[in-house]
Amino acid sequence: MADLAADAVGLLELVGWSACRVVGVSFGGMVAQELAVSDPGRIERLALVCTSAGGRGGASYPLHRLLDLSPPQRAAMRLTLTDSRWDDGWLADHPGDRALAERLIAGQDPASAAGVRAQLLARADHDVWERLDAVTCPTLVAYGRYDGIAPAKNSTAIASRIAGADLRGYEGGHLFLAQDPAAMSELVTFLRSPAG
Image 1 (cartoon, helix red, strand yellow):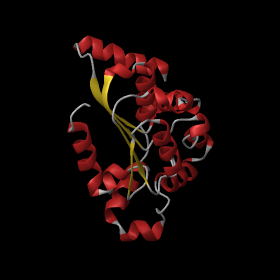
Image 2 (tube, rainbow, N blue to C red):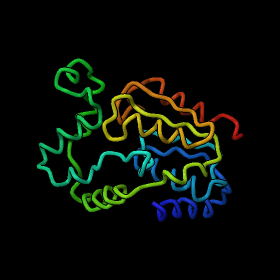
Image 3 (cartoon, rainbow, N blue to C red):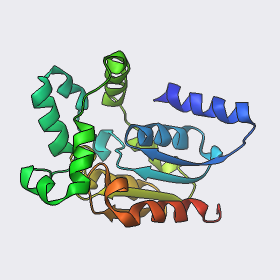
Image 4 (cartoon, rainbow, N blue to C red):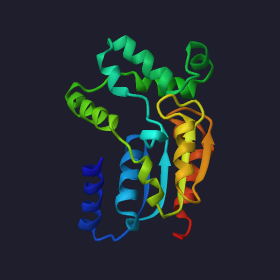
């Protein structure tokens, strides 16, 4: 994570930005946390979405374990982890969620398998818990109520370590930004608010 956060700083330097507003979703939320604790002056506003701090703050589900499952087992686990409500009955009654679920289990490009494995292993040791109090910018921590990958309690833990953090729960799972109509507009409103 430290290398990825350093890459983000390098990008900011390349484009000539001294600071920016950051949205980190899932794995990206882990990178965003690392950036926020290692170089807090770079971030004006921070949104941490369906992510985890690691350590005593709670880890996200160890998705690298799914790599050892058969494709049908992996697909079934991904569905229930993504949204705990997603069984056959729920998906039959909710066409929007069914479309999300179908895209989720459609399969992965074999050429990207090595990159996916590396990303899943990188997140396995993520732990910024003890350093989260270094975050100094306005922060929104958002979660889906039915997320089995980054459960609500992990977001509650993150918000408890960041002074003044705004904690919000939404209807949906790990993909709540596409499930709850209020989520994206509230995220954009938060990011557009004055920096301090």
